[in-house]
Image (tube, rainbow, N blue to C red; front, side, top):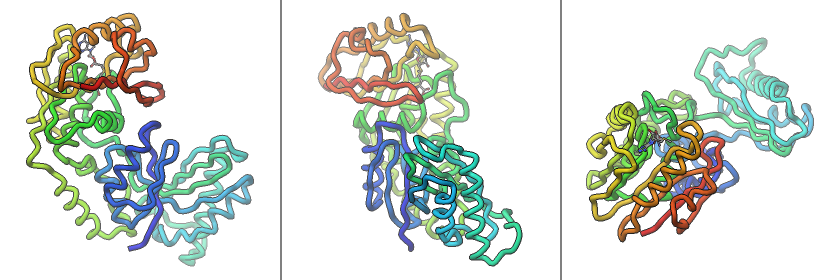
Length: 373
Ligand SMILES: C[S@@+](CC[C@H](N)C(=O)[O-])C[C@H]1O[C@@H](n2cnc3c(N)ncnc32)[C@H](O)[C@@H]1O
């Protein structure tokens, strides 16, 4: 098995979580950077990260890293790679990317140059004259030019990894599955935890909690760009799928309850939980936060209340934070984890958080307010 370098982009603020997740999977040389984590390993590690990572947005195979301040340097850097080591003769290889804070800022020009350099390298290796036949499997090339440093990578994931395959429909303001999974990690959900989400919407936080507690790997239900790559043998896929299935914890006592005032969201949540294979672990009940109560002796509340942006206005949202402060009683054996962008959240809630953590919900800068037992 060869040793490759990979990059896994992620949401800002969750890099260390992702680094730990990858180390736990057996990845080597794990280095967290702003918005992405680098690691290395064989083909099996790419498959494993795709199947098992709850936090990564994608898994990219890093083929070249170099500095370039001119189109010639960009061409030479890409041309120097032996692309035939990665791509078969008939590979389709569309190129997309981003240029940030660099001398080279024209994405379309860089795209064209990278495509041409890559094609020249393949033609020379495969002794092709004229056009390459791109009728085979797709190897999407992604580049990033940041502060004149070029990374050229192949996307092994295809659809982003937050698309687990269980969310057929969503409500008005669904949370990205990868962010929900990060909240679950930060909140310390374990195999026997009892979790409540009083604003559950389409159920994402509870479904991610259940899958974590039960050891259900998030990628088992979906397809990946590298499913049929010649680079990865079917035996690697079979082994990794079997290992992923073996993560299941039949000894888990995990249970959860989701409340929401919107019955149509609850209906979606029930469907999603069914598709995710965790419907028997989560109850979804119509209830206003004004009537919130915890009957259980211990547990963790994790929630994403309305922000007054897509749902409600800010005054109405802050009124809900006040009600939450009254109803989330200070009790032994209960913890509260609330993600919210409102700087006045603690004032409305009525207590200073024991811990805060900056996280992004899409483009929105939020804090995860944590209240310990
Ligand atoms: C930001 S969304 C939560 C999205 C959810 N995390 C998901 O992934 O789908 C907020 C939810 O709060 C619900 N909601 C609004 N006011 C409420 C109230 N007074 N009591 C309970 N739920 C409420 C909305 O119906 C909405 O589903």
